[in-house]
Length: 403
Image (cartoon, rainbow, N blue to C red):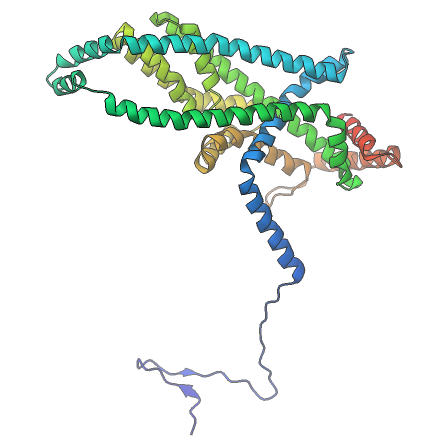
């Protein structure tokens, strides 16, 4: 006789076995994936794989668009004063090239001279530091190690590392030159490229697209202004400190610190290292002063100055700026830290422009008025672009978005 209870081998109480009643059907759950869903998943995976494979090309494109956003206001300023667009682009890029050449000619020879002088005077510096360390019993062994230090093995290792590093620098330079020329072509072919972009977007979204593009250009310009302010600040601070300490080649070292400040985290090491090396000729006290003061300034800049300046320029809370820097640096290193702030500002802008309603946000009267204004602008755009090409429609959308 079959028992309705199932016994457990562990001696636990029996669990009644559930059976369908009279007239009751067994219900089966089936998960079906449609062909369209599978195709979308394949396209997404293929797109991610393609982005990973073309990551250097995407970086060149991002850098080129950054250059376009930076040079765009200057070109428009020249256009408003009666200068043709092509001539204005040529003037802006020539000025950029001349400025970069002057900065490099000011810093590179002075730094090379400084490094050569330090290499020649290295035995004197090493003996002076060893004598200073030998005065204390705690550092006497370190002084003996410093006097007996040999560089043959270290130089071989440094030579191999320098070769790899120089190849990376050459690769970055090639990418940088490619980005400059790509930015030049984008600015020259602006109307056709913009027309092609607007051609693949439904006309009902053209006004919003034009507004988003203008906001992205504003974000890029604000980010560049913030970078300029922080670079000028560390340049001036470093120059005053080096002049006060009597360190030679103060201008070249300060300019190099200003340029290196573009790189988060690594810029501090690149700027402080040459200053400390140059301060060795002035004695250990000056070395300690330069190192301590510059480290304090770098900490002040990263924790206070950068969040406030970028927060004001990009209309972001200082906490968001600091969090974006930390998150970008942790995920993608230096490049992530550089792109993190404009990416955060772009995400905030897209949330506003696409009217993404957050869970804890209530509808405001200003948002309703803005949507009504957008509807009127879209109606005017539809009326003015009836039967015109995508290139002309893009120009009209930009004009209406400005108004």
